[in-house]
Length: 188
Image (cartoon, rainbow, N blue to C red; front, side, top):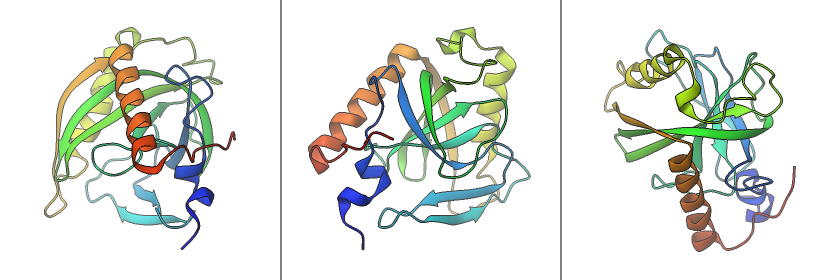
């Protein structure tokens, strides 16, 4: 097992300007059916599963380093971006909302963010500015992506805006510090 200070999810700071500008480590690029997860004990990316439903990730999906969510994992994040990146890409992003969900593990919050360097999305400041179809497409993905998997479910509860997303991020940064101390020190 690697030392905690060498694990990306524990050693990289959550962002350059928490909670307004964050880092997202991408696990699943836009357009894939493969569900990758970073190992909590190594920096290896593992194939968790191929999605059982005929759906693809609508945008880049990953986690915010230096955070600890209620499910015991780093906080999930979906990044609106024109073209897919690659697994383990670190993006600087701006959170604009949060999707509140429940799954077999309990409460599951997913931050929605935009890439700071994508001219198509960079000017969005809050989820209310997005075309409704973007929201509907993302919601439909998370509502159905576990449908054919045994002993799994996902239920979409509601969307909240930027201010609520900032609160969720701050809570997860504080939960990380409480559990692990101030070990997230690396600036990517």
